[in-house]
Length: 340
Image (cartoon, rainbow, N blue to C red):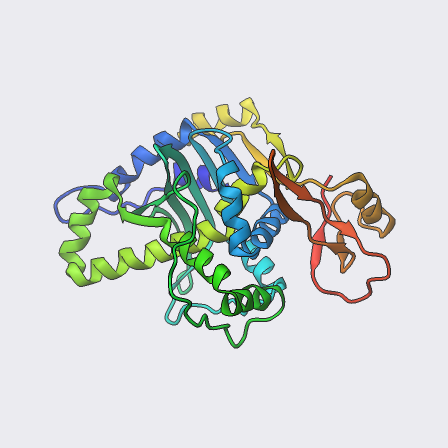
């Protein structure tokens, strides 16, 4: 779990002015300790990715109904689950040229500040050369105008380019924005509702890094982190919030921690492990029965037999039309893992 890794990890970095890098991360550790923790399992990540590929106008229509179940709250996920889901939906998952690290887990600490959803982004990385692992707080803090005006602006329709290697669901999503001015405007609206700023907890860290890489290097690093934050927010975190606000989309299971295990950790000078809620896809009894009939059991794979669910916005809120079995559907399109 990323929270446990964050609490335990020590970078040992000390800047030229004597300031320890890890001290800048301590405030977010304290805020996470006071929050409700959610972990997306593999299916919940896939559901979130599916919601992210809905029409932008549909995503905008959900926002008046989206609330934080807890404030503050933490949501984390495994990045490999997101990459797998996006590959199943037709993404080529192109790696950034010259990338030196591989993001293994990502987590967002969320709280409301007036009409804005404020987020701290933490990531666990693996160095591709040395295989060393590190956990760190992003140098930028994100904001999303969750309670702001969701009316798309009257902008000129611009040609949206469909990626030549995009296939399947992703290609359909991009094609909708390329063909429909309303979808294009809604996508632009969603993007402009997000902004970022240098992280206030890392002011001294920022001064030190600025001194080492200069103004241009700092600007590039922060812009890249802001883009990465928005990409993950739009593909996992915002869709997860939509699902958590659906009446019937997901369910949570509390995962406790053995007091004896934490006593042993304390005796060794290690921080305690924390309990959390795992977010799982909720299947209708019919879908569960279909999975069992096909040998899926409560946790087995069922390829090409379930149709991904979708949400609908009604006057009373957001509702989820559950995944369902399609009889006679023979093509293998993706893996859907059934959950208990």
